Image: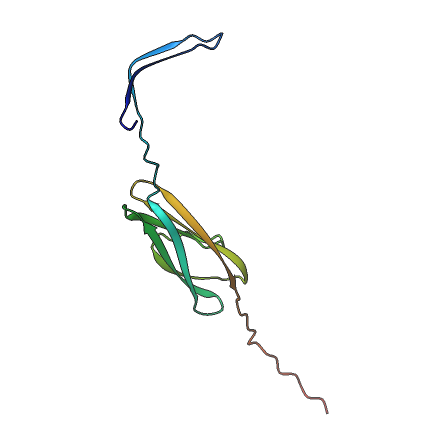
Length: 133
């Protein structure tokens, strides 16, 4: 029954262990299941150019506001701690972007998304070759 109080617990009936008496210990029984404060987290991504992306973090919470945002772009660069951010990749390849949000109670949730960065590398140097007649 919700709110029922058990005044004392005795234990230690296992052979070889000394029993423990805990006078005054009260266990509150509640049948309301735990409800996570963060319902879900989402990433909206927009590719701006071959190597540049904009990311928007979306945190859906029940009651407590999101306290922190943590972006990991998967390329070894520093994390960014804002809700929305942009990132430019310097090496072409596939990357996994991860967003972790934390609410004011310390509850955390995360999501990942995969992107493909294409870094263009142009060689504008040229050499004039002599013409042999």
